[in-house]
Image 1 (cartoon, rainbow, N blue to C red):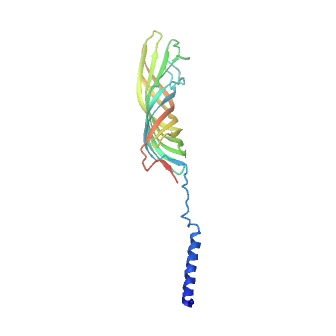
Image 2 (cartoon, one colour):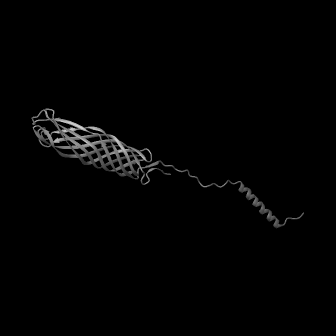
Length: 270
C-alpha cells in the first residue's frame, strides 16, 4: 500500500476544516433585519387661522331712557320715560383669525338688521296743569354695525373669545303729543349714532371649514339730546327737547365658513 505524503495530509485536513465550518454556519440563525418602530399618532390639532364669513340670528333688547331737559306744556324737566323692547335680529359677519399656539387673535365686522321697536306713553305730570295731555316716545333701531378686535383661547376645536370695538346704530326716534280732545301731533328724527361694543362667545369647529358659535354683545351709545320742534298743541306750537340714553344687548347664534388662509384646518401630527 502506498503511504500518504505530507502534502496530501495537509490538503485533507484543510478540506475537513472547511466542511466543518460550513456545517456550523448552516446551524446559525439568520441575521436580524432593521428595527421596526410603529408610528405614533397624536391627537388632531384644530387650526383656527383663516379668513371667514357667516350669518347670525337671535334676539335684541333695547334699553332707552328719554328724559325731558326743559319744562314744557306737556312735562316738567327731568321726567324720564323708559323703553325696553326686544325682538328678532339677524345679519352677517366677516373677519379673520390667526392662531399662535393656543391663542387666537383677529378682527371682525358685523351688520345686524333689527326688528326692535318700543313705544311708551307718559301722562302729563305736575306742576304742568294739563292732566289730559300725554307724551309718547317711540324708538325704532333699524340696524347695528360693529368693528371689533378679537382675542381668544383655543381648546382644540373649541374657541373661547372676547371682542371689543366700535358700534353704530341707525335709529328713528318719534315724539308724539296727545291732547285731551284726541288730537295727536308727532315728529320723527332719524339718526345714526356711534358708541362702543364689548362681548364674547364660544365657537365650535364642526369641520375643517365650518363652525358654529353662540355670542353675546353689549352696545352702548351714550346720551344724546334731540329737539322736537314741530309738535303742535293747541293753541300754540310745542318745542320738546329730550335727552335719549341708549344701549342694546344682542344674543345670537351663527355659522361661519373659513377659507383657511395661511393653511388653517385640522392637522394630524405623527
